[in-house]
Amino acid sequence: MTVTQRVEAVRPRAVELTKRSIATGIVIGAALTPCNVYSGLKIGWSFNMSIAAGLIGAGFWRAMAAATPARPMGLLENNINQTTASSSASIISGGLVAPIPALTLLTGQSLDYGVLAFWVFAVSILGVVVAGSLRHQMVMEEKLPFPAGLATAETMTQIHASGSESSRRLRVLLTGGIVSAAVKLSLEVTGAVTRWAPTATLKNLTISLDPSLLMIGFGAIIGLRVGVSLLLGCAIAWGVLAPLTLELGWAQAGPADAVWFEELVSWLLWPGVTLIVVSALVSFAISLSRLQGGLHLGRMLQGVLSPRQFLLATAASTALVVTATFALFGIGLLDAVLAVVLSFVLAVVAARVTGETGVTPIGALGKITQLTYGVVTPGDVTSNLMTANVTGGAAGQCADLMHDLKTGAVIGATPQSQLWAQVFGVLVGSLVGTLVYLLLIPDPSSMLLTPEWPAPAVATWKAVAEVLSKGLSEIPQGAGWAMLVASLIGLAMAIAERNMPPNMAAYFPSAPAIGLAFVIPAWNSLSLFLGAALAALLARFMPAWARRNTLALAAGLVAGESLAGVGLAIYAFGT
Image 1 (tube, one colour):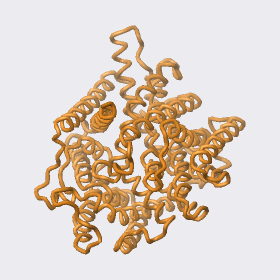
Image 2 (cartoon, rainbow, N blue to C red; image 1 turned 120 degrees about the vertical axis):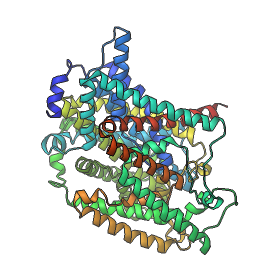
Image 3 (spheres, helix red, strand yellow; image 1 turned 30 degrees about the horizontal axis):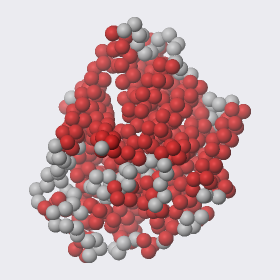
Image 4 (spheres, rainbow, N blue to C red; image 1 turned 180 degrees about the vertical axis):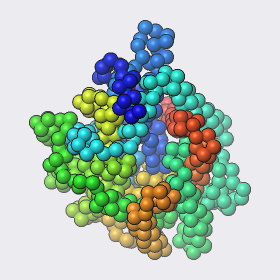
């Protein structure tokens, strides 16, 4: 039986865009958004919250129906909930964990809460407009898979077909969240946040074990291939290159009993960032050359919006972004308009690549804009970062909505309703995500690129902007040759991966993951690998249990520690 057939068997009466579905999505989105802001600043990655939001929404209203006259939430109504919540949680593509902090580190410019929330909303809403115009071509005509959207449709169908299935998965998620939060709070409150390392030397090099269940949960989500790649990158960066740089005098040692992350990462980030950027851009270019049917923009622009609605929405969102870019950052009007046009095209590209592969190349697309403005406005760090911020925000929200529209197409939802849900989600995410970022990182200059907040995405965007604005003089001694080697390795690995059979590529190391290990402490990579290995063992020896529960448990571990960390930040702010 196909997903669509199972949907027909369990479809409730056609209740969809309701006050309850939007309100539920707003509440769940507000609760899940801090998780992605927190993890984005920790390891530079975020988690698609569609399935978690669907599980929580279905479980909550089933419990309410058992205790009150309220009715359970149906499949289509829950789809509006998950669309709203997932768009809120994906707000970090609007720049909160990459270009915005990088701008503060390089120029000292910071934005107040209201201004920053407005900026994040403006760049994100552009992606919603683009996605609304692409549904017909990509989802209905070409039937691109959009893997995350299909996975959400499959899971949502299962939990609405069986009340016990939904309740059991929700219990697993909540259990993981409670345990993770309890561990985080107990370690912080008792002052026992220590990492174990067998020798002082390993401690200096960040090679130790970290009691973070968030990292274990993320490791279970990312899979064994990425986990092993992180372990490999950790061994190369912190086990080989870090001691070498100290021996050659390219990096300076810190206090004998301290962790030398900041001293070492200032050198390691250059080859690490190079490996990430080169491999991502090459892989992205190969993906573009192989897209089925090409990028026929004229054919794509048929969708949820009528031609008139599309023109009005495009004009309004363009005016919003251009005005914000000019007013907040002093970027010229022509340069701002060029950024919107470029971001529109790259958001279409992001949707197409995401539809075929499931991977949204936000980082690679942002680098394309950074490289473009390195030529258009040479030496202008602000222009370089914030025009790329427009691209990242548009591409991220466009890809998120396209996954949700795929879910909606499978289960028979109304696309216009999902579009409104996405707008509500973007608004909530902008308000909540900005608040969480400012509470967690009140002083980016002293708090970021540290063992507590490695912020690898910030390091990447900052490094590219520095090189494009100031030239190679910004690169530390010895790092130039390391970057050359890293670029050749990234090129070779991307070409090799894209030209080998899929069954072999599944075991081939991930170049971006190896590069990421250069810019986060070794203990993070070790924990991520541990989580991936545990998930792989469960899948091998307990396949039925793992298929049903691993994702929910991992999501709980991520959410629990993230929310506890945010809660501690709020408490510290209040005191």
